[in-house]
Image 1 (cartoon, rainbow, N blue to C red):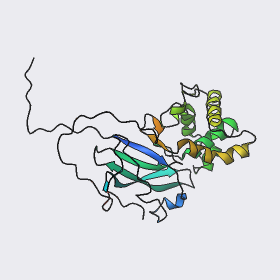
Image 2: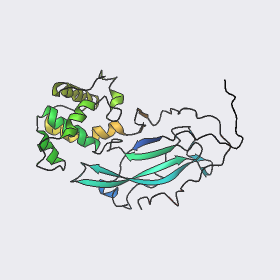
Image 3: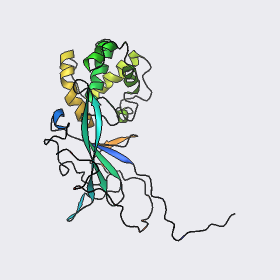
Image 4: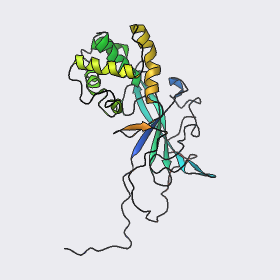
Length: 262
């Protein structure tokens, strides 16, 4: 066995930092998320109560431990005609370096299209039998597009993918992707049943989708692999003892990475 040499001046590599997304209730209109509108929620309004990784409370006495970490921009499609650009607030724990983003509950993490758009498109395609080009035009796609591959992908991944309500799959008896429209219709029906959406008429379903979908995402913490309620603390993997080094220099709430909405 080769001898192991320890370097006193060598510092262990920091553990990889994983960003989680915490979905919050969107109390402002879409237009207030764009162009850094003054109506967007403030850094204090969206500050998480604790770090989702180590459990450190956001404010420890007079000290801020979960600190504003600027904003990043994100493109979203389906909320209005074409693409829009919104700003997402980000926070960082000064104790463990874990970062957290606060995403409006109308948007599914890591998806280009709004969550309501995905479900409405699937409902129109699988239940109402509308064609993919017609549905695409409704949500801002070009009229000359003959197919919409996203529809097929959403149909396959609904209740299976971790980023498309996959955490509900086991409870609803879904473990495999839908391979055809019949299976997709079954998966969607179970999802709508879980959301308690009435089936009296298509107009009633379409009228209730937005509220039901947002309710299904509100208050969740999402790390791309699974989701859980923000009220239920799930500590991350212990990264080992502190190396004794000083906290890394982080952007402050007064000097963010990118200008937050003002």
